[in-house]
Amino acid sequence: MKITLIGGHGKVALLAQPLLVQAGHEVRSVVRNPDHIAAIELTGARPVVTDIERLDAEGWGELLSGTEAVVWTAGAGGGDPKRTWAVDRDAAIAAMDAAQRVGARRFVIVSYFGAGPGHGVPEGDDFYAYAQAKTEADEHLQNSGLSWTILRPSALTLEEPSGRIDVTATEGAEVSRANVARVITATLEHESTIGRVIEFNDGDQPIDEALGSLG
Image (cartoon, rainbow, N blue to C red):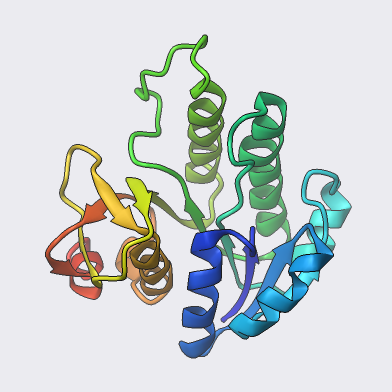
């Protein structure tokens, strides 16, 4: 597929891009900083430099034109609530709306374990903006009419990939970024993931088997 990956210089994205390329996909990787071009090129993806916080509807349409699938791994990284709302909610929703307009039917977003209306984070908490922004973006995607998948990994680690996850857990634990990258790639291969919210930790079940069991 022709894939546009948003947030291309993130740790998960840099691990996912070579896997997507190896799987035969054509990957366009969106980054804000031109200094990141070389790192993107090393993954085999084609870098596209733009600031997703500043794109209007026309700009989003141009960015996603010709795309068959969008993979959203972007995030403001916490800290500044204003930027968190702008990236994790507003830009994500703008990308979903643009994907719908230009016919990019498949949309995979990386959220977090525990997101949703019952996230339980109080408004005065420093984590609230992130929790609520992710929740609202996820809900918008679910109602978008796109062929969506919401991935909700638990706390991210730098461990080596085991290739095994647990999609049945009711509480978050840990999962390696390398496994998340593998889940992103496998998600695009499994139609059973369409219309699914997938919360997962590292576990004992091979990723393909775990995702295939969702059907």
